[in-house]
Figure (cartoon, rainbow, N blue to C red):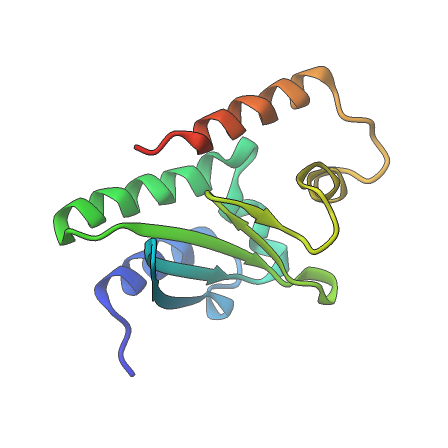
Amino acid sequence: MSATIDQQFVEYIVKSLVGHPEDVVVERVIDEKGVLLSLTVNPEDLGRVIGKRGVTAQSLRTLLRALGTKNDARYNLKIVNTDGGRDVTISSDDVSTGDESVEDFTDKTVDNDVQESDFAKKSRKELEELDDLDI
């Protein structure tokens, strides 16, 4: 089955960013919210795809919104983390890690030994508020 234009679009951008482009996989599912694109990358590249404070992932979602406007479709991007044998889904709508909360996941991913600073807490809250916006 050939990849659709939206899959090719995300794949091209992400492969340009990561150190292991051969591990980039974009799966496409149509659901009640629109088109769901699930992005899987090498665990070493996850930070590059998400970016500092989630800026790169948010930029990808913005580009997808623009593509959706052109194609008259609503796109959702899910970034799947397969690091350590557990699947963690990071999306603009939700963060699902089984029994862990968003804060637990972020603390483990960013730094296991350092307490979260007030700046980080404030930034996370601002990002959560931005995710709630339906632009």
